[in-house]
Image (cartoon, rainbow, N blue to C red; front, top):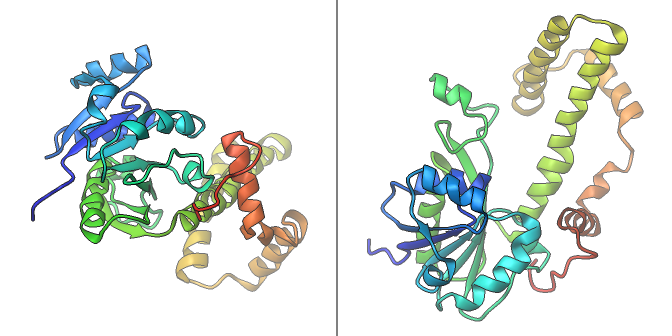
Length: 289
């Protein structure tokens, strides 16, 4: 196979995600340029044994430009980078919010893609200490990636999948979805719901310990074990919930969850939460969905 996507420029290479993907791309077959404005972040790049590049000098020659910058900076940064990119190049962002909201700079001949890691599954079979320790992914434990690439051709998509597999590796599968679908996955499904439930469970644990007086070790042991079994029963049907447990589940729904909670999947609600996250008045997604 003759590869066309060979040169990669990472803008924001010294940030949290920039360093993660740079670690994986550094020793790959790709020609990677590392760009960073922050003095402190630049020091991190140098300390990692990578050579700093000047953004103006490398983005014009890059086949793929990765914007590893905070969501709120993507409009400004893309406005600076996109006009300098060569025709046929791909602008790759790591989160769907700005793309869905229509904040990214557009230009004919420039393709846009988004790739977001799923993180290692709670059901992942782990066999080494390194895999057990890798909760985030990108180190030892396998994770999938959800990505959107709604222009370009099949060959570019195939090559882009290989790049994504390296930057987030080890990767099991790259799932191709639309930008809008990716926005429903994150934030709606995993942040509005899953991360909220996770933080809610932590509050419930603190209440059990501090208000009721249950010893911390006992409360954690009971909750941590039941988190695993609850997920296994709900998602894998390993065993049915008991009749008494079903009654408690219904009581919890009545007391905790609003009856109209599924409205978070309405498009207007998606627009609202993304606008809040990006700190803008409203999304501008005329052609992004």
